[in-house]
Amino acid sequence: MKAAAFAYERPADLNAALALMAMRTAWPRSSQEASHLVPMLNLRLVEPDLIVIYQDFPKLKQAEGSSDELVVGACITHGDIEDGRIYPT
Image (tube, rainbow, N blue to C red; front, side, top):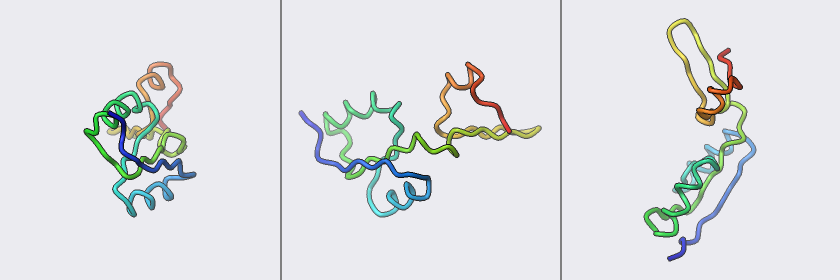
């Protein structure tokens, strides 16, 4: 089986992505998740009309820390943390 038709967008910033997702039934995804998404699309377990790729947004690759909490951006990977590429500000 093949995936149903869908649109694909790679917006320039987070505000543009949020606007796209507000207009349609969208699946926000990073490209790291493609290994899970493609089989689900092909089996038609999911049928989004729009897939929004958000991995290139700098704001989602930031970590912020204080004495009692750590906020980790949605696009930070385990590898980023393990290899020391991410430092809380």
